[in-house]
Amino acid sequence: MSRASRSSSRSRPSAADPLRWLKANGFVLATCATLFLALVAGGASRLNVGASGLIELASLALLPAAVWRLMERQAWKATRWPIIIGGAIALTLLAQLIPLPAAWAAIFPGHDLSLAVQQAVGVSPSWAPMSLTPSLTLRALLSLAPPIAILVATASLSADERRTAVLVVLGVALLSLMLGVIQVTQGASSRAYLHEVTNEASLVGFFANRNHQATLLLGGLLFSAAILAEQIGAQRGRSPALIAGAGLVLLMIGALLVARSRFGIAMLLPTLVTGLLIIWRSKALSIAPRTVLWVGAGAAAIILILTPLAAPVVLERFQVDASKDLRFVVAPDVWRAALDHLPFGSGAGSFEAVYRSYERAENVSPNFLNHAHNDYLEAFLEAGLVAVVLLAAFLAWVIVSGVAVWRDRGRADAALARAASAFIAVVMAHSAFDYPLRTLAISTVFALACGLLTPPPGHRADRRKVRIRRDTRGEA
Image (tube, rainbow, N blue to C red; front, side):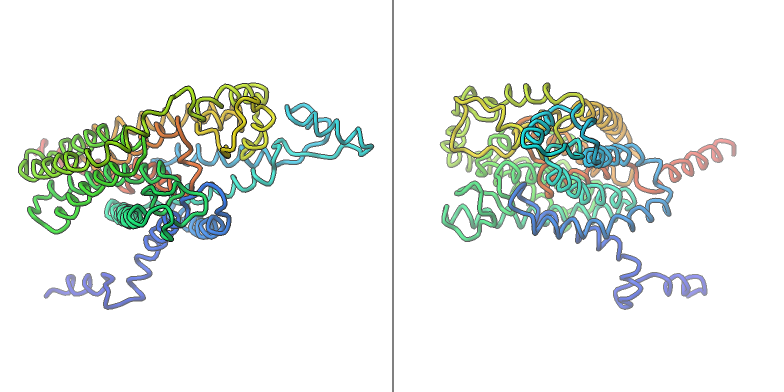
């Protein structure tokens, strides 16, 4: 062995030297631990203050290290737009909490009633923030810490490190699926349900809402397809990872069929097609067509077996009259409230308080409406025109970045990036009918996907090196 090889073997961290290994991999472990905590404990949008606080504390500890690492690896430029947009959202919520003199606060819609009450009882008008519910706006501001921390952390990870983070998501998705099977098997009275307010007798796993569980499973299906594409593309034959990836794809399909989520069922076929496109784009079909055919045959078999069993429940879910669906019934009232609170909105977290004053008598029911079941409409109510501008900026970045990753064949994590772009599209489609991003579990995976959409550190430099080598060969 040469002296150079001996020195390199000494400098390489290994499991035999735990301290050096931990120092080299500590940041990745911290990122994966935060992601795991958010997925396991962040599956509810309300009545989850203790678990949310723990996730937010872990994220606030991770964020400074993530920013430092991003700067150290000179990956800021490639990630600047999603980070700027995330920072702008945080600054918008912070601005809604700034106390304003009573004369200024009266300018903003919604404060006139409060000022009138103060004057009626003989109390001099006091300073007030722009938000009508400042305590809830503060909670919303703190809830931004996990997704922003995961976004910055993911952007600083190498291709291999990003794959590790995705495997954490797949592992938790599998655990959530297994927990959901126990819940459905034991029935509505099962103690396996983790949340007091939940969809009983449904496969919800770590979530309170079956639709959010379905969103995670759809993401698991896409990321499993990406891992499968990488394994096939590496010509690893029947490696355990390839078999595990194919098995996970089949499990996700089966779980989505019995999850009783209309959105999950509606998005199953488009997601499957996208997964096949990810494999095809990775040139895996030409390398191992038999493997893909076996996976396709397995998927078809599961669909044929489970569809007759799940069909009655699925048809029952789709037979609901759209005109009586609460999410569509309340939309005109929410829209009217949003227009009345332009241009700056009523404040993040204020939906419930504001909606009560706009709810029509014929819509009053025992059902509790904690969100508008339309993230775009709710954001328009709570942040006004600022929400429209930020959403347009985010959509522009997603479209440009998504097209780039589907065209780029030189990235080491190209399959994962394409799966991430598809998952972002799934969540944004879901947000038009529900509120997936109001849960920390989905918002952190969404942030992970946004981070995966950015090129890993050194990606552009590596491509420049390849071009230089080609130019040198051409000159020779």
